[in-house]
Image 1 (tube, helix red, strand yellow):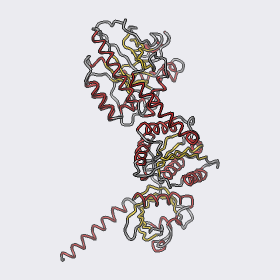
Image 2 (cartoon, helix red, strand yellow; image 1 turned 180 degrees about the horizontal axis):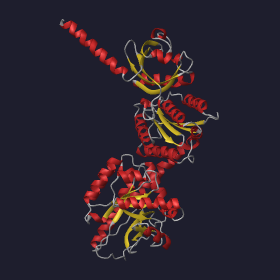
Image 3 (spheres, one colour; image 1 turned 180 degrees about the vertical axis):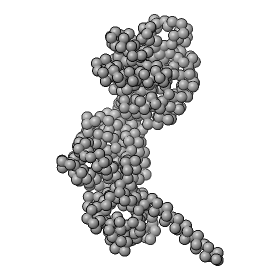
Image 4 (cartoon, one colour; image 1 turned 60 degrees about the vertical axis):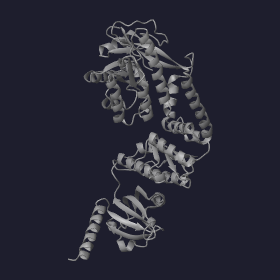
Length: 550
């Protein structure tokens, strides 16, 4: 065989390998021209449509798709031409048998043969593990921020649209589980097909969604497509209402870092307040809210910069001996400690993305206090709460390490507790950082354990020394058998893991005795003392550690 023949043979083998690899991932392939007409088809196309390849050539591919699914196909084609790819799109193909064929489609645009869209078709819809999923709130906020920066710099215009699918949860509750899963995946696909790059879309739960898209995307059409699909699926035929509000991310009002934080806060409020903050709020008052949020951020930063907050301390006692073991330090806003609720302020700071500034300020204040304690020849062990938001911010971790480099008292005097008020997404990275703090000699704990859905997930993923049980669970445990069983399970698990426990909201002797009886080591509440600014008169017994928590 000649070299030329060998070369041709090698090319054929490579081609055959490519075709074999392609068909291992798809049932059929279709090539469309610029008018969405079929230029080439191969594979199991007959089983999908009931027609052979030759019959399909020259037909408009949109005519093969059920009418209600055509809008998403059009959006997908447009996205592929602009971005190079689209999908997965969940569609239904017409079939000669009269029964539509469920289909999952992916597309790639290539400038060959005058330009064309190359589609891979898979029979059926992917399982839930492979179905279309949208970003969570935090991921969506990040891409919205990036899109806002690009739009303000003139790189690419972008619009953020928030959607409230009022009544969707009720419809899904009366559907079969598999049908409801398919409906949600279809809605996700409809929204994602309009997103920039096919990725900038988010689902926030409670029937709320967001998408960052090109200005020319037809949002009313998207809403109608979703309405039609839900109405078709609803067993009772009630359907849903779709409310939308769009914000131009290139607006001059969104001009700097603080405005970006205001945008993030807007997204957080929309996604988390479960009906209290609605699309109508966005429609009627977004600009006003943006101004108010900007001013709140500036005021918050000024509070930190001027140190206009106090730290009050509440005692925590060892239930067995009733001796004070440590203190919890509580933030009080204003020089007189009578300002805005710390809970509201901290929640705002987390939603606006500026909580790390407050956490660093609290660390600095407590460290200064411990320096004074050392100079007075006393010893205290103080714990400072760290928000999960802060722990997922690399710059915060760097700044905290730098701050700790100036700490002269024994490391064991300073303890850190992780709050569950903000969800931690990268538990592995967080545990690694907390581990580095423990190696330095700082104890680490979980605060308000049980108040969030991720409590046991945190306990499994994060290596800690102490767990503080939320006061609501302490109270419930004394009034119901279910609450008592839940509390006993927490305490038993912590004992097995060699983790100390603290029970909150101990306001009477009955509560203290109950916690002691089920094995909780420490208690905190008005029974042992109210928060106070001055603990200078307290003198610890020899070798006893004292802790204060924000």
